[in-house]
Amino acid sequence: MPFRALSRLTHTQAVFVMIAATLMWSIAGVVARQLESAARFEVTFWRSAFTVLSLLVILPWWRATDRATGQIADNLAQGLLERHWGVLARSKAFWISGACWSVMFTAFMLALTFTTVANVLVIMAVGPLFTALVARLAIGQQLAWRTWLAIVAAGAGIVYMYGSQFLQVFSRPDLEPGGLIAGSLVALCVPVAGAVNWTVVHRSQTHGEKIDLVPSVLLGGVLSSLMTLPLALPFAATPTDIAWLALLGLVQLAIPCALAVVCARSLTAPEVSLLALLEVVFGILLAWLGAGEAPGAEVLVGGSVVIAALVLNELLGWRSRAGTPRIQTVDKQPQ
Image (cartoon, rainbow, N blue to C red; front, side, top):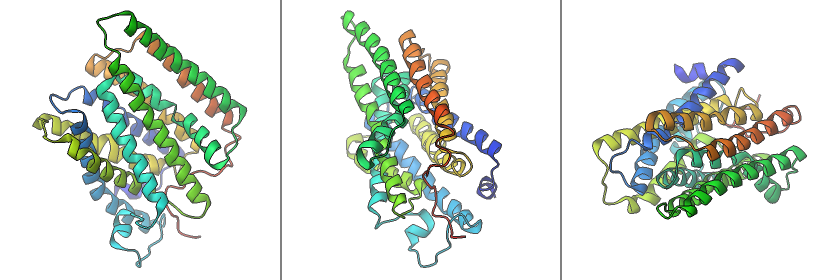
């Protein structure tokens, strides 16, 4: 049974599975460039809808395996939705987490329709730094000096990257700056929503409420589908488009999100953060090779500064963060 094997990953196996998850995440850009006629909100609707369908099948199988291996309690008093899909209907934090996922799902695909894959991925990469800032403001979590330096360095990298692009756009009357501005602002919603999501889940868990992250992804997909459906009509996607978007729903979202949660049981938070940065590298490379979307010099330089700041921040904090609490992926059975 695949999930039973995944529940017993060694550290090395978890590293390779996490790398596979980041590779699956990174296909969104190159696949989006293969679409023939699907419009902006329709792209988001179909991707979210297929994510929901995939998780409706995966989650009962997943949770049955977790109950069998003792990862979650086997509580027969749970309702149908909670037992099979992990839906915590009475949990405010669960609904907020789902809403954050829905914003991330919607904003990511919309941003790809406005600007380049590289621009979107580099903005998303600063998520850990946004999380640190939101946690500082919302729950008073102290920030180490290395994190403040990383925030300044990453900010400088993004200013350089976008400043250079804006100078090019405004110096050439044949180029339209609207797409770059809209895409950048929409992409910014992804790390902001991610930061709010982590902070809410972390705070709820420190108060004894365990939020299973994969069911939150399911709720996010449902909310994203409902929000974008009216804006997606009338549908214009070709059968080929729908096939590509079904691939994204299953392979780019449902499966890697589940794998990342499994890996988080065997890897430390800094390890997960560092490995997740591979999505930026893989995503830009795949868009370059698969769609001919070559990143400009300013993206390579500015993006490298951002990634270097994030990597150094995690490496410097590896030892100091080893004993700090981290998000629990499931409600484990008492020992």
